[in-house]
Length: 304
Image (cartoon, rainbow, N blue to C red; front, top):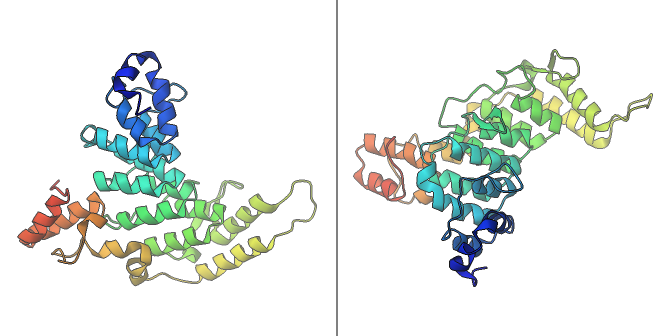
């Protein structure tokens, strides 16, 4: 397609939307660059879906296409909820590279609920609900900037710990406990089976039954994986996470940076999201560190 050129494509404008959709799905950045020189409308939904081009790229993990479209639409997206929606879509699919791209370009609160497929949900909730651990790690590293929302404040099945248990994801469950500094032994969660609040151990049994019980059998058996998860939850329930664990964990190192009143000379600010850079800029400005302010502003940080 790059050889055909934008002028050729303009002569066949009636099929541009179909061609655009194919180019995005093939993740062909060079062809996409050519298409952007035509009259193709990036705000129109694609022919075979209800999604716009950038949403399609983020949802399907089309990294190169997403990068091109984000750069093209950057000014248009700033100050809207759309970057948060795109981040939630990327988190749901576990597309970490696209998440990094979005978080570099836009100041996105990963705990803020946005409308995705008609439902109010935050990017963090999307990651946990979809059982995407790497997405969750990346987003939780950003969530330290606000007062942590109580992970057990909702008596619903949208609760993050509830979802981690039902997925039987040990790493996700550990991540949630450390982030929110809570003990599993002290909480109760909603049971979809009985529609009442139950202990974590009871919900664990429900999760095992959901994955392993075969209908029609008179005797329920639990696999070794099920037993392992049950024992893991029992041990984790006896542990009370400390604040130090929440801050010192590998995925939350960046949490310490914005509380500094200066910008370390050795720090490469390009390694951090715009949300973090903006918070660091506030601290550097308050401290009167002109060198740090210049470094951060050069890297795209700005005062809210």
